[in-house]
Amino acid sequence: MTKPMLAKLVRELPVGDYLYEPKWDGFRCLAARDGDAVELRSRNGRPLDRYFPELVDALRTLEERRFVVDGEIVTGFDFTALLARLHPAASRVDRLSRESPADLIVFDALTVGDDDLTALPFAERRRRLEELLVGAPVSVRVTQITDDEAVARRWLDERSPGIDGVVAKRRDLRYQPGKRSMLKVKHERAADCVVGGFRVFADRPLPSSLLLGLYDDAGTLQHVGLASGFSEARRHELLDVLRPHVTRLAGHPWERGFLLAGSPMGRLPGAAARWSPDEMTHDWVPVAPVLVCEVAYDHVDALRFRHPARFRRWRPDRAPESCRLEQLELA
Image (tube, rainbow, N blue to C red):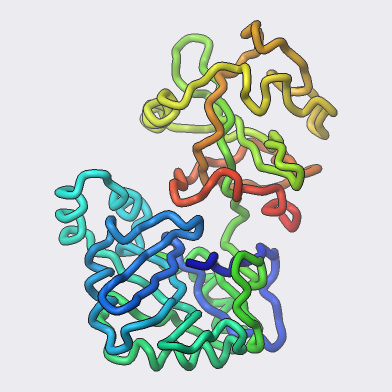
């Protein structure tokens, strides 16, 4: 299956020949049907159909038997409930599919029948999508859309449940897999960061802060700042997630140090210094760079958070290597 088209983060709502959609707070999903076979794939190509059997069944009810559509999986606009759906036990998946059923909010169509729609303007793809979903179950629906800038601004200002921003697409936009061809405006500045390590309190073995990183164009994990200010309960939850990924410093992306060139905020503990991988003289605990979390922040100086970021949630649907510095360029 192809990669989804992505969106570039901008600070202001673009004005011009755009169509605007709510940016839904869920799991990005490409859904493909070929006869009775239905696949759901995350933005990184990970299979999702086993976790959302009710959506698989719903897509099988459509009259058209061959299509690929792009959308967002949501669960009552509760991201915590959505995360809970990613459970390895089939019995739990079956139970949660009844207790907290998911919806697929669809916003683009790549193929319908034998027709490849990716080279068509977005306005035409939208028309074909609406035709495709006529008579679809309520759990599979087309997203809202408007060409009225004032309506789009209300979506941003009202902060309705499940909406965390606005996506803008030019009417003539072709579908470009893997490219950041759409524009998005979010309610607050946010970034998906790789957790490279954490610090603990001097008087108790609980995380005091997370060390955050983003990849540059050379594939190097650059330290971009910290997330802190957790409640005591959250610290225990973080430790449970972090503990299985604690690793040796040798072989870690930051085994020789990070921010070696200095920082606009000055020298920080554990930063702008060098150490030997054989001597644990640093003040942080390295973890394998496999965990991704979403954080909110205010200002960025030289591609680094000016103040500690605020942890929002884990993002198991994001691949660490997809978390890049370009997220911060326009912040």
